[in-house]
Length: 408
Image (cartoon, rainbow, N blue to C red):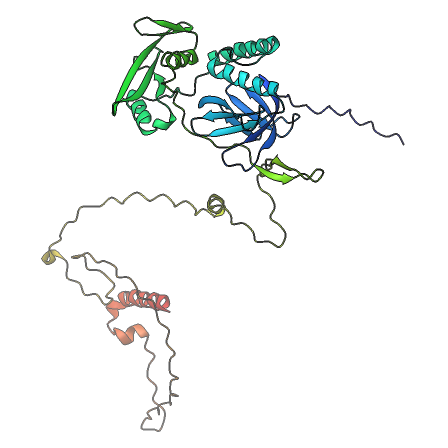
């Protein structure tokens, strides 16, 4: 029996490694860490990403350089340690060699200050690599909006700078003239008195022109921010709200091979299905309210209401003009008044007591001793002996019989 050929398996798609300006092993120690943790680190834009190994595609931590203040060396610990000082924290790093330390410091200063540093011990090849990273970063920033750009009004910008002075004192916002430009709002304290200033930036084609005494053109909004920072000797700091939250859940796990503790990213849980079956023998989850409402039988629609009857005008008939008539049955209405039928009460059946036996009456005897018999008289004649009312009595008797039949 010939076996059916199985279709060829398609190769699994391989993940693309992230493109970094610079990457290497880096040991990191944060303000809440007891010891250094070793990661594979990569610099991309203004962010340093940390991975468990150089084969991973998903980072486990990241560090934003938007709040950069300075870089310092730790002399007591040797030449392979340096510290990254941010506005809200300090991060300590440890590398394998002096060359690696200078490379990391050089690339960080390049993307932060948008220039290749000249005060570091670098080889010509290293400077060329940083110049390439500078060109890529400038091209990236022309397409992106700086983090200090917020869609707020002038008053909201002033309130943000006043309420969060530790997050910066320079903020970009849309211009109020509706011409597509932007405005720069700054807030500084002069002799205890806050000084708020607003600057206009015109958008002329692909260029942004800062409207000052000597208009200064910039290729991007990020260049506008760098102009204000550099011209004020870094007294103006771009506004950046503190949002130091991780996006990937991780935990520390001991490596069984070498006994070292490593940081492991927790796998993302599978998306729940539309309706998973409950475990056997377990309690059933309650149905949602929408399901209960949909499962209930809807009441049948009510029949349409009949049109209201045409009410005739009520006329009062004088009693004196009514023909005189005697009625034997009280149910017969009088033509002089309108009779409203009364609701009938439910008939209550009561147990009747047994009737005593009827004893036959002695028949009267005649003078000769024979029984005297009375002539047969009809029921109508018994009530109305007058022969002229035979038709009326017959009709009334029929009505009485019908009424008794309805009552029983």
